[in-house]
Length: 301
Image 1 (tube, helix red, strand yellow):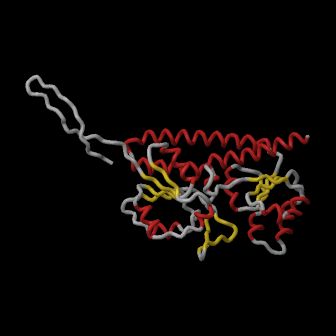
Image 2 (cartoon, one colour; image 1 turned 120 degrees about the horizontal axis):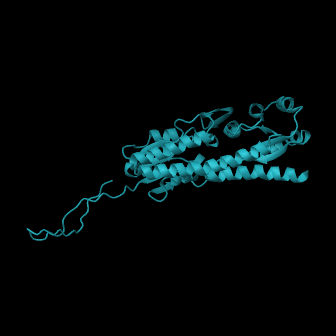
Image 3 (tube, one colour; image 1 turned 90 degrees about the horizontal axis):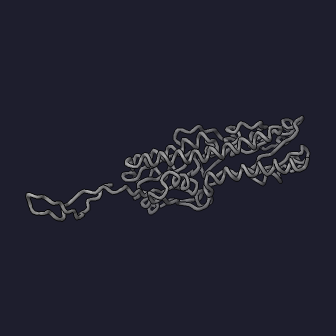
């Protein structure tokens, strides 16, 4: 944005009288108003823009985000911003309808999932009358995280091209920090190479596949619970030792308590993002839980 302001400057000329108060054009830095849906995206945006722009988020917890009923006021508030950045892939099931009703003459609308590789749900997930096909936890795949962060960087650079080098530098620094977490995760995974990981939740699919865990995937069985569910699970689990159950939903520990006990499966909690935590905090939590499990097992020997 260009502002025209007046400033004083004295120019001495040996042939003419001094001229005071010469009007000059001064180009100020762009000050963007950016809004996003949750704290997770807020932290990603802040890693790119730092304190150069105003960044806000709409929801402080997942339930408010899921249950949001938009109004003309909320549409008008977003329409006044410079950028509206959202997760996409059905993370906010109401979002497509919201954007269809949004006046986009001023605000740039950015879906950070554009270009990421999505996987489908095994289970049926519904929001009102809408069946959600795409698994929205794509950021647990680090390649997808890079794409999403790049989409944020590109959007800000388009609005503020003068400072594109600054955003490029911040982008690189953020990726380096996350890469360090990824190295730590690989290190603890290598320590657990004698274990086979069991998973029952679609939400962990990106995490499992990207990190190349040796896995017994029971998510399809868990998605179609019937009289044969536990029998089908047992068929996959038999003859396996050193089993770790990676879980996000703690209710699974109660539902399959007998299965966990009979096959001596060791549970380890893994966090998937809920919009309330930063990406780095999610990575740190998962690394610490896996590392803690490993240390506990080592101390038993």
